[in-house]
Length: 467
Ligand SMILES: Cc1cc2nc3c(=O)[nH]c(=O)nc-3n(C[C@H](O)[C@H](O)[C@H](O)COP(=O)(O)OP(=O)(O)OC[C@H]3O[C@@H](n4cnc5c(N)ncnc54)[C@H](O)[C@@H]3O)c2cc1C
Image 1: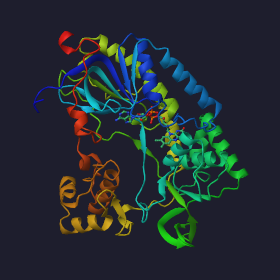
Image 2: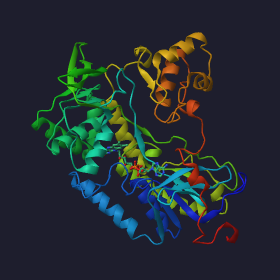
Image 3: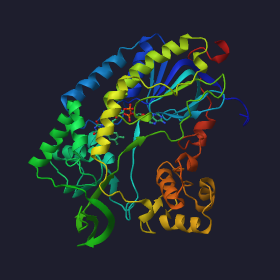
Image 4: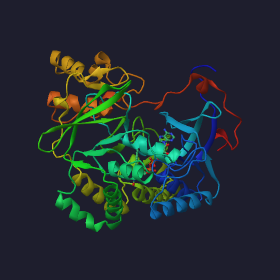
């Protein structure tokens, strides 16, 4: 194939939905019920997304609240009964070319396919925010969400002594799930103090389901006597020898500034959720051949599973209306947030206020040897030195000369923290966005050259030349 030869279009469809979590499943069902042809892709081998992650290898499912089990059953029933839906698992969305072709990688077949959807729905969920701290890249330091995935997939709790640290309700959920599996964590170090944020707590009375869920977690943890230290800041993690092996030591300060330490085998960090929007195409219609592009669910705003389902369902109806109108395909969708989301957004706002750290650590106060970019081993000190030489360096110059966001992850994991530190060190009036370091380009994940070069299969539906 000549490098400039157009890739063969395998098929055209009305809607390509990326992400088989609650938002993507709800949207795909809604679109199919409106009579649209829909392809739903997910990188994983099973549907469910973050919250309904399925057990693997015959493992027993982790106990879930009845409301959550019911939600999952309904989503699955709606999807499996939706007419003519094309489901592709272990298939990764790579990006949207300027002329409107969507590229997906079929990992089973080992090839990249080009699709031409009239609407592209991005439902790629959220990612955990992890703030840098000295020692956060040591072996044995993981994310709390990572531990939760491990439990959901294996049905077993993580082994050894576990400390959960950072901030947010997910720490309570993970601790309660570990406890439910018979292995409570040593302690939770929570930087906020939701029990003292009265106004946020009172506002949550309007959201009884969330309060019930929180009360369930707290009761489980109280019965198992798991310490929940609030106003506790994890200052650093170190590896120390213990007997013939090594242990991690978490040093933390309480709300009065007194220092404490805890020895553990694993330290699980979590500092909140953020939209998983890395490298995703923008909503703007760049050319008439480009599809309508929508973001839904946590990828638009991390508001939780019920909001993701409401967003997905509403998007399905909106897409059908847009595609039925002659100009709908060229429209953008940046303006719309369904009214049903307002309540969820308000609830998440109250939760964020309740868990806001009592004494936030400024990135500029981190020790110089704190790693910022783990792919390239670049530190806080490296960034400070570059900016001390020339405070006017742009994010792109910092990237090129400092190798921040330049490694294998291309900034997926370090760009937000590097942007925050750069903003703090330069006193930027408008904080730098992570995108200033990552840029906007596809593929959004590394793709093997063999998969790009593999010939496309014969079309199973009429290709573009026939439509
Ligand atoms: C780590 C973590 C733990 C959480 N724990 C809880 C909890 O305990 N309780 C709670 O109420 N909520 C929790 N949430 C929030 C909850 O999971 C979400 O609100 C809900 O799942 C959002 O649904 P969604 O469909 O928008 O995204 P998700 O459920 O995240 O689904 C996104 C899907 O997109 C797929 N995907 C992503 N990128 C690509 C790509 N390029 N190509 C193909 N597929 C792709 C993913 O594999 C995934 O299946 C958690 C979220 C995270 C990230």
